[in-house]
Length: 313
Image (cartoon, rainbow, N blue to C red; front, top):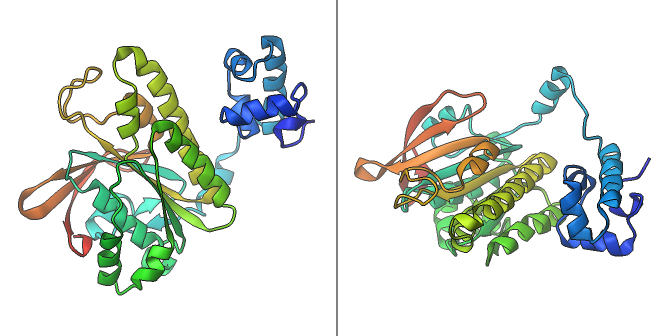
């Protein structure tokens, strides 16, 4: 029975292992669920060898394991809820954003997506009894929107030490979609040394949308977006963390979707996100958050405000 490293798979020497890792296959599960044709191309090996490698990876990674519902229920007892500082919003989410899940916030420019992420980042550093996760936060910033000044304002409003909060928030700029995907792998490495309980990607789709233009690029864009979402979900599971991502809506009828209130990324993002929330502006600085999709909660709305102090009822 092969062990847990790629090198221990039959037919994988150091050179092949390096090629696989460079292509993003960092664990057995990633190899186990790949198709022989793709693996053969990536590792420059014969397809029959690829079949053997995948089959051995399936055995080692225990792909086909079914679990009984009671074990899953037991594991779900470890799930924590992260507060948003708005009672109405937390109720909409069944008590807050849950760990081991992806929450996607989509809406037009200025609808409060980034502000919501800042608030979650501050709250994640708070003790569990205050609705926090008492952990560190990773932010993958794709549009240069991170503002430490906002964190200071929000932390001060909650009587927290702004400097201590900022020290627990780790920000990386992603310069393109490939870099964005690599940062999730880097985050997983760093998570071994710190207690990361929240990962924010703001924005999830901006780079993908800018780089893959036109119908010809759609398949590749969706494939990479799919891998990225699954890497994020895996991060959430491994670290019992909350994942919060932001997404834009097509401001003009998009070549692929047409509807101006539809989030970018189509079904790939929709199916991978556990919770989808649509944010829109309302009168008097209010925002309406609508829970569009959830595995266990009804579709409903909450009214929140986004002010200098942050997100409130």
